[in-house]
Image (cartoon, rainbow, N blue to C red; front, top):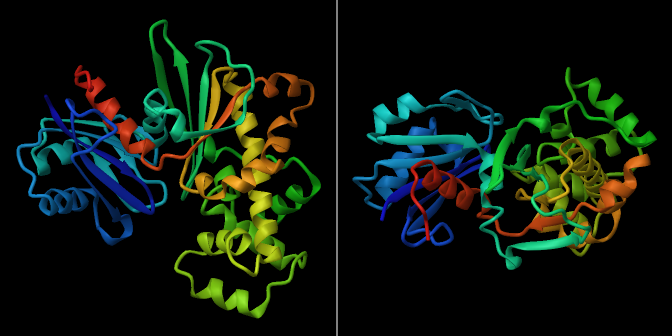
Length: 336
């Protein structure tokens, strides 16, 4: 039996949990989510977690971090935190810490997830041991992939969400032109994430394609986060705002196109998994056709992309489970 603290560290929230190898990675002993911006450093969040549950004598940890891992150092892309392994070891008394990219952590969860954790939106024709891909729109846009090493799938980190946005139709070309007036570099993250949805909304409003009613402007202005407000007004409220619906449809089309791009880049014949905090909340819209139409639209390679299975990860704890699984694997411990 070995205990380990696992973490899913993002720009908006940080979730920490204590795991016991005997209980497995699907059932944490304790778990709590913290607002990342409320803390000056990651060390402060860990101290709060350990204090909240009176934890002591915990020597091992594994953290999935929303940002690039450079050696033993990580910077949160959408938060002013720097996480250094040496600092964590010194300040918190751990004997071993694993730092991995948050999407690499999600990739570690794929073989742990069950059918109830996933919704298949394209059956495809999976190839046994074929490469897999993971794409996850949350606060930012994360991407990762997995390759078969002869005995198991090995996850690999990626920062593909920060590659240049490639428009696929005339309106997206105009969106790119609009955003280039605001940003030096327009990445997929700026149009395909929690950050990106308000950018699309502003484009549709500022170019006069859609009117923003006064009541909607007031509601969005008062929202602490515009992204969920836009999503709710698009799909869940009685008003069903036209501009909000258009913004979400454009986001979904771009997500489908980039999922297909990632699928082709790694030849993900083993399947593509769509994660992140946004996807499970818009499942009806993902089933409607916009996503798959954009996903399939790959010219001469359309027949190839159609064979790739696509599943949406419904389990919001996938990143945390994956971080725990990676941690136990790093320590050479088999979790039940």
